[in-house]
Amino acid sequence: MAEKASGRKMICQNKRARFDYEISDLYEAGLVLQGTEVKSLRQGRVSLQDAYADLQHGELYLLNAHIDHYDQGNRNNHEPDRPRKLLLHKQEIKRLVGKIQERGLTLVPTRMYFTNGRAKVEIGLGKGKKHYDKRQDMKTRTAQREIERELRSH
Image (cartoon, rainbow, N blue to C red; front, top):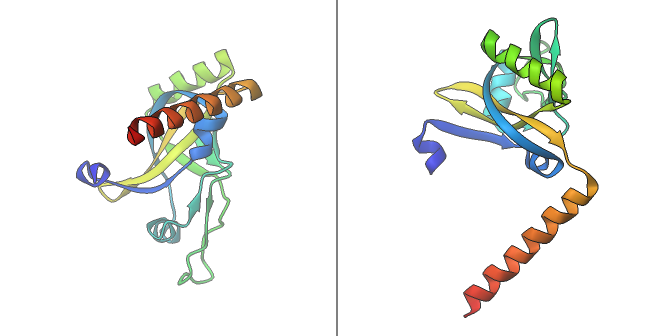
């Protein structure tokens, strides 16, 4: 309900991003889409599983994001895995490029949503987690779950 109250309609989330990366800064970017892509997004037929953002010719692009074909589309239907341009201010792009080159970070999409009818993607600066970091996260999550279970039973 909180998502709807703020004018946002969630399309999809990349839950794997928080597991594989330590996300520090979040940015909201617009997307350049074709008509059938928007209709497919409204049906929720999108996957951000292996997606990432990269710099090409001074602009940011969303790569490996899969948006399914629109069923009622004709022969001019979109390519499902094509690169999609991200819309950010020039200063934001410069800041992101500096952080990526300086610290070796990755731009990872965390979720996609509609804001006032426009498709947006939330990208975060992510640093890859090591295997032992992931195990530690799983241990703390399990311990927290057990504590909550004990509290509920008493």
